[in-house]
Amino acid sequence: EDQVTQSPEALRLQEGESSSLNCSYTVSGLRGLFWYRQDPGKGPEFLFTLYSAGEEKEKERLKATLTKKESFLHITAPKPEDSATYLCAVQAAGTYKYIFGTGTRLKVLA
Amino acid sequence: NAGVTQTPKFQVLKTGQSMTLQCAQDMNHNSMYWYRQDPGMGLRLIYYSASEGTTDKGEVPNGYNVSRLNKREFSLRLESAAPSQTSVYFCASSEEGLLHFGNGTRLTVT
Image (cartoon, rainbow over all chains, first blue to last red; front, side):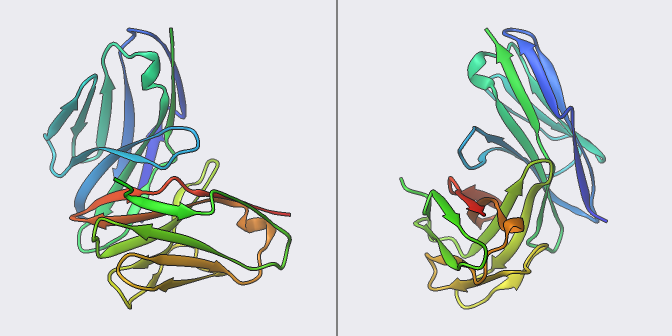
């Protein structure tokens, strides 16, 4: 069964304290892995798409990496404005369906 | 840029009442989706439309109906609301694998 598990559920960091969020997945043929950011009261906002093991993408303080079993979202020197819920999703090859994880709630303290 | 627009933003219903959630996108995307988001459950697919005139059931379709009115609009109808349908509902559209979300409708059924 296709499945996505995110850890930790919640994370509190001091401003400048780097860390990583994990997304473990099982899927019958990966078409793509997606990272989204969700702010309270808003819809998820796209961050990255990764397609194959070894791929990396960066945007400001965020860097996403992908292996055959998991993806990491690395946050370098976070700021309070990085506080949000980060969602991971996978799309299986040959389908339109996206399987979402339950997210990691990140709080960055000033 | 409007993107994906959902109405209403908030709604309170009594058990047994009916309502339609509206969704429109201005990005000329073929695919549109309805998800519900519940605490600890992640985003779950209710219905999907690959193109105008076609719809498919997702993971949790019971109690819902949809209409793909045209390429822009995809509505979700609750015929007889139940407390279990209390949730946040998100509409999304996609092209080339990337989901674009609206800001959601927060529905409470008492």
